Image 1 (cartoon, rainbow, N blue to C red):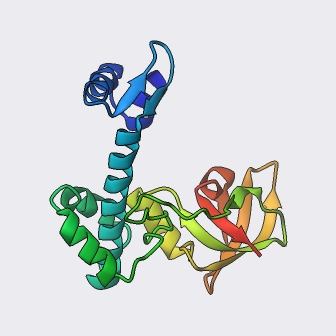
Image 2 (cartoon, one colour):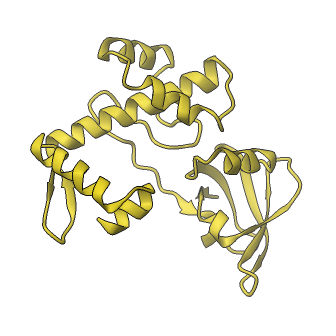
Image 3 (tube, rainbow, N blue to C red):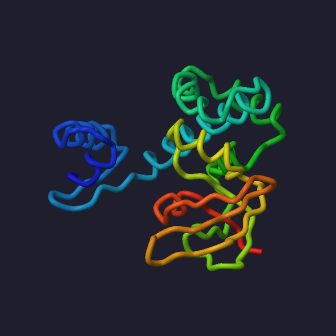
Length: 194
């Protein structure tokens, strides 16, 4: 629970309280000093929330033309207010997208998620190329940096230089100028190798 608290940026007590509530609602199981797992009911609910959130992000970016860096918080506000009927209509209106603007997979109405083979950009070597499939960091500042340098899903990317001793890659995405990024940043960009 300590690691979960650190990941979420909350106290261990908050995690303990939430896990207790999830167990009482039969949404999760937890072992003392062990792992936490969602039950079938909990997994179904989690996939529904993910589907809602990501479909709303697609709508906000593709239809309302909001910036991809600002839609995460807006989607969090809207995801709990949408009925299943409106969600299904939104999915149809958007032509059943399988990924959100950041490249995250969208579960279908049955909770299935398409399996995509993706590799962290940090695993590529000099001369390797790929197509950006996903940007995993939803921080607005990071997404602004990524957009400024062409690091968006669908863009072709190549490794210009790899410096192990500096822990950095020089990459060129789309028509953008080459940019040097750390291995840590490159971990957040997932690609499909070419």
